[in-house]
Image 1: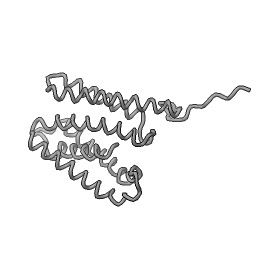
Image 2: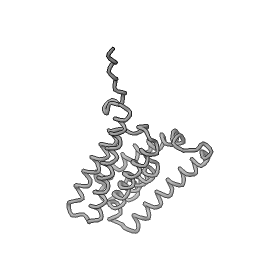
Image 3: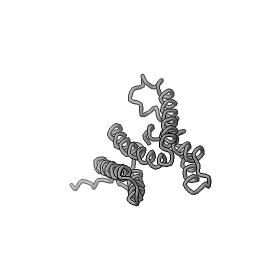
Image 4: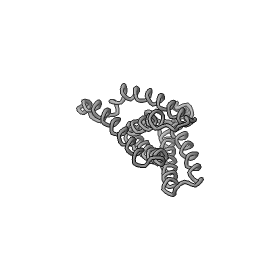
Length: 187
């Protein structure tokens, strides 16, 4: 998962799971809390292995300051987005973040130039999640939000196609990730 997206996501889930909660706690609040806990595990994995994605070993000393700044900035930004936009903030911030995520996944694909940490499953379920949320937006939401949903769908479709092409390029099975066996040469 791209770290900037993780920082925003974990902040969003904390804010809408523990800080800004409706008078009557509903299913969405509990879902936000559960996703927050899951993202804590993803954050721990990033803290442990994230340095391997840094391009130059000379800059590894920046890893922890970058991590802390990005987490703090994401949290403060989303908290003030909530304060400024109030009841609309939860929806607008979620779809803007989703659009950012969609672009970051494509960027991560080109940066890594491999399937490392990426799969058809991740790309497919990101696309399905976006499609479902975007269809929901057709039910009376603003054109801006509908447009963000459409942009996310296009970006997620692109990401899925890139991943599928990479599987073919690496001669891997889409479901098992294993190399396809090549036929024996005929003598």
